[in-house]
Structure formats: C-alpha cells, structure tokens
Image (cartoon, rainbow, N blue to C red; front, side):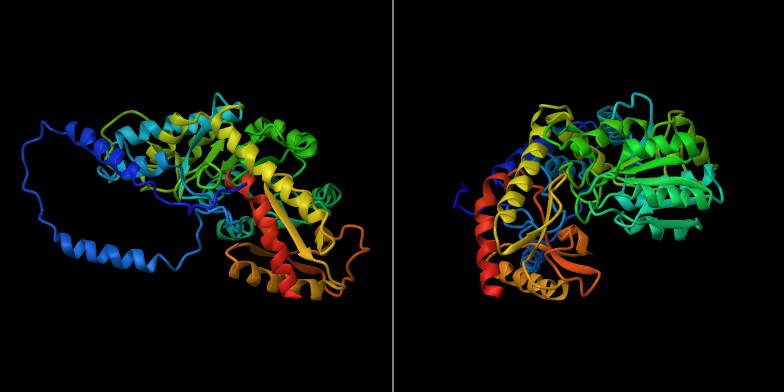
Length: 457
C-alpha cells in the first residue's frame, strides 16, 4: 500500500551533491587568469526566487502519484543535477565551438537510443521536442518523395497535419479501428487513390496509447514503396518492456525496419522539457541537410550537430542530462530503467481491471501501454460525457488529478450495446500512469475514483 508521508519533489541532500559537482567542474578551469567577478544583489535574487516559488504553487502536483492526468513524468534526480551542472557552462550544441563536451555526450546518448532499436548505423540528434523531431522526419520525407501524400491515423498526434501544412505537403487522415489503431482497409483505399510518399505509424497514441499495426504496414511498404516513419514519441521506450501484449510486442519487434523514428526522452526517458530525438536508419539522408554558412564559426573538421539539424542553437544541457541518466540506468531489458516501464504498464493493467469490474464504469480498450480510459456508466454518450466532467472535478477536489479526452464512442462501447449513440464521441476520463510509483498507488486511486463517481451522481 502507498505510504502516507508527503512526497517531497526535491530531495535536499541532492543539493549537496550538486555543490560538490560544481566545485569539480570549476576546478577544470582553475588555470584561467583571475577575472573580476560581477557582484550580485543576493537579497534581491532571493526575493525574486521567493516570488517565483509562490507563483509556482499554481500548478498541479505533477511529481506526485496522485497526478495521473497528462504525460508529465518527473525528471530523474541525476537528470536535474546534470542539467543544472551543465548550465554553469551553458553549452550550445549547434556547433562544436559552443559545446564540445556536450556535443560528444549527445552523440553518445543518441547512439544508445539508436542501439535500443538495433540501429548500429544511423543519423540522429536531439531536438526541442517531438514536434520538431517529427517536422524533421516529414521534411526529409518531402525531400525524398516530392509531391507525394503524407498519411497518418486519425488518432495520430495533430502535429502531423500541422507540420504537413507548414511544409506544403499533402496530408490524408486515415480512419482508425475500434482499437484506436490505423484501419488497414481504409489505408488500402487511400493507397489505391493517390500517390503516398510516407505513412506515419503511431507507436503509442497520445489519446489512448494504441500501437499501430507495424508488421502489416511494413508489408504494404514493400508493395507500394512509401517511406515508413514511426512516431514513437510517447511509446518508444516500451520496446524495453517485457509485459506487453502480443499485438504491441509484434509492433515493437518490427520497429528496427522503419525508415525514421521519433522518441521523446522528456516523456518516459526521465528528462526535463524539452528533449526529443529524431533518428534516421539511413545516414545518407544527412546530405539533404547540407548548407553553406559564411557566418557560422566552425573551428573543427568533425561533424557538427548543426549540420544535421534544422534547429540551430540547442541546449547542450539537455544532452548532458540525458547522457547522465543513461549512464546511471542503461537502456537494456531487465535493467532498472526497463523495470520502471514494466511497473507503469502493470499499474495501467491493474487500474483497468479494477474499473472493468465496477458496475458504475464503462471501460472499453484494454491498455496497450500505460494509458487507461473509462467513463461513468450512463444511458447515452451525451449523459456519460457530462458525468465524466463532473467526476473529473470531484476527483480533483479529493486530490486526484485526471484528464479528459474526447474519443469515439466505439472506444468505450465497441459492441454498441451499452451506450446510446446520440453523438459520435464521448468525453472519457483518462489516466496516464507514467510514474513507477503508480503501481502501489492504484488501490488509492481507484478508491478516489469510486468516491468521485458517487458524488457526481
């Protein structure tokens, strides 16, 4: 059972480690001639920080297990400390001149992520987040398949349609099936109707955590010749989990065969925002990034990350934090990091099981990763939606923070027997159990959901 002591978002003993680490870093520059130090108004700085701390109270407790709403996972302490330590130097990973050590650490960290997908040869780098990473993937797709259509599931992240518009690429949304995955029959119709250059497979939709049928998409790539891009921003790290269902496990096993892949270390990778990653299986696509810049100061013949990135200035501290986290917890099956994913999925399965046996609840999709959706039982989709919103508010009053999602009624009632469809969608309650601590907190979360449901009427 969960402990009753308050969860401290910051372990004060970590600050002592940071202080000693900063001293070691500064020792590396001890040979520099003395420079006049700027005097700071310390009382004024402390006063401003006190105001910041007060303003930051106006947040949900993202670090606590009773926050189970959006995809917000606390960074690991080593990531926070490494990020703060790197900020003493404030490196820029655009050019080696701006971040030599942090650029090398980025290359090593990205190579470790690529190795997780069995890509010994790759081209990749970190980005500000999944949106920028997906933009690079679709930009390369547009360069290699000019004039061809981008296709993604209607449950794919909305960023793909937006990015396609920005890039001037034609975009088609493919219907999803009752499991939230790309509907293969609908995709076949699109492939017969027009020239498709790239199909985006979502490996963990942000709505329900559904995993698109990657093996079947690979078969269609062989027949039609399109590029296959995997948006694994949310779900990618689950390739290390050993308690996936057979369908999801089959999709993850096929991931090494895609042409490009996006993963977000700032989701399940325990990193501060923002930290995304784009990977290309064929390093030759790097030629498409080639540019001539008379004003970028390159003092080394080595590859600069700015030469294979659409972004220019990027925080080297993000790379340092990721490197440190992966150094502490390698990306291997059976390791500590993989165990966290196992616990998150187990928590989701447990919560779904408990809700499924509660006669007050409507549950449909069984979680493929660690997202659970449900709605209070009601006669119609409209009534269930209204009750979901009331339960959401009642749960928050009891300290449990969930999320709301507008989803097709079929996701909650696939057999069309439990809910009258007076509207095509239903507002569902949604929980993302990303924290490994959630495994032990499921009984308490379930109890609060039950009490909130009773109060909502």
